[in-house]
Length: 307
Image 1 (tube, rainbow, N blue to C red):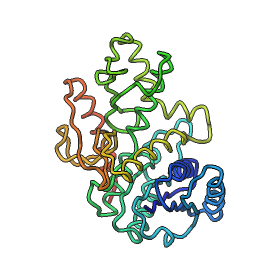
Image 2 (image 1 turned 90 degrees about the vertical axis):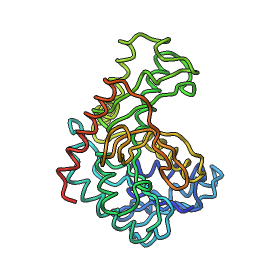
Image 3 (image 1 turned 135 degrees about the vertical axis):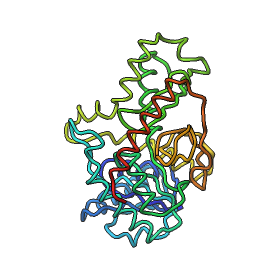
Image 4 (image 1 turned 60 degrees about the vertical axis):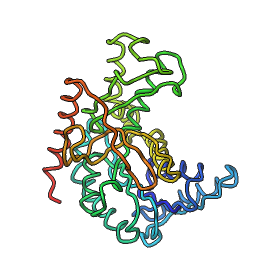
């Protein structure tokens, strides 16, 4: 496997580090338009290999020619959110960046799988899909894994239990309109409702919806990158190992959940070919309405773009 990570910022560098440490590829290429940044970070990361015992070759570059023949391309390039800025505020700037990046990747790696991380996530997946011309099974986004990770972390902290015993699903757009499903949340197979009251659950649901903004508020000049990096690595591992993991990702829907021609977060089966199946779960009328509202928001943004 050869894997390219576009964007040598905090998220991109963390993704490259995670992939290399787990030896998910023979080669990782970190590419960015800023001269010296990907080269410096790539060299620094490569120099950790003898300490960590990883034989994955990691290097940085400004040239997309060096990414040729990549099996998986992770797109993290774009402007990060600042305090008070919504994901949609990033739309126009990041649309141009993701479009340009996708064109370069497709030129040199026409058979690759594209994993989008740039925000606003669901809409940037659409930009990558339209620009690449790839089948939608090979263009999808990292969203729900990060959202469920935050949700599970908050629950584990509150209950004083291991995060490993918590299973959860989060649907919808990656942002304020996400749709956590407490009804499908279990702890060691026991429904969450047996562990805490509805009000207490709702507190964590609300914090999950605003999880990204909470971190931006602390950092002031940046956004989250450790948890997003780990979430991307989990997706890459499922692709590389063809492990058929069921993970929540931003996927293109064509009738599933009653939605069409929109990217939205849903559970999918991830394997070597990308998204091999979209998993549909039964929703209550309230949950379905919330998902439709979330999808409507994403679709409204998509329709404002000229692609």
